[in-house]
Image: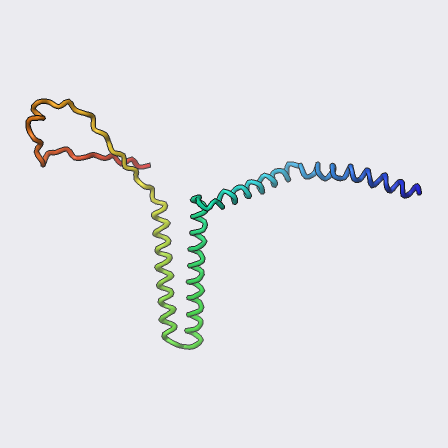
Length: 157
């Protein structure tokens, strides 16, 4: 009976002391930094999961481009393998056509990337200051070849 009572008391002490011991170790600086990084990554995933956000659209467009490129590469390998195995010249021509399509697709992707990287010029119209009209200016009509042209200032930035 004394042994059972001793085990019961030891179990109660363990039930109160062990969770506090393990909880204290989980709040160590190394684990809290890891928890913070994990939470930040989850928040970044949530922010890119918004269907109307630019990051979401860019991510899914890039994924679609990768899928198309992988499908073209697989088609290239399959047609080359079949052309080699069967010895048919027609399949070799199909393989060359697929290679040309891959080259054109990569060229298109590189052009799109260059267009996105190019800064866009912002056009701002310069307003003209109102001039006091004199009687001489009102009396004679302007000469067409010397009319003032509209001026715009391009500010790069």
